[in-house]
Image 1: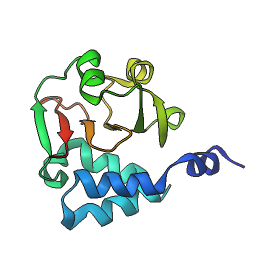
Image 2: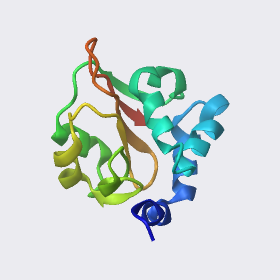
Image 3: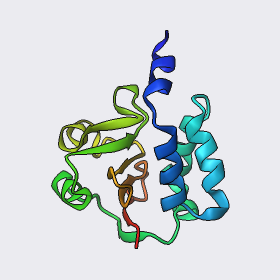
Image 4: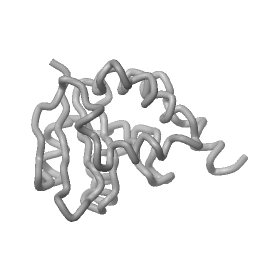
Amino acid sequence: MTVIDFIGEIMDKEFEKKICDAFFDKRCSERLFYELSSQKKRRDFLDKMCHTADRYIGDCVYKKFGKLPSREEIAAFLDDESCYFITPYEKNDGGNYDTSRTLEEIWSDGSAYMIVSRDCTRAYLETEYSFSGHTAYFLKIH
């Protein structure tokens, strides 16, 4: 079994479908889910979030940041000790991980990633850093 096979086994496809339906526009949620569910295309999901997240996010933006919120603000907003992470890092992608500890590793590193509360009502999306800014979102289901 390769690392990629192992990662594919721990990813919760049903929860990722729920994420796409909850936080992304209906016109593109199926395509985004397809990308998340394919190991070869999974990176495409994050690439879309890098600079064009506004095109895909549904009507759930609670707050948009031009400057990143602190790790503590993110953890407080998510209000979960462990959350579901979608990251470019195999180590902490596609599973529930300790929110504070994992944020210490990935927060503000320049890559796009998404963290979702276990009840799938709140999420944090950080886009890739670019010279024009580092946009992040608190997403919340109404």
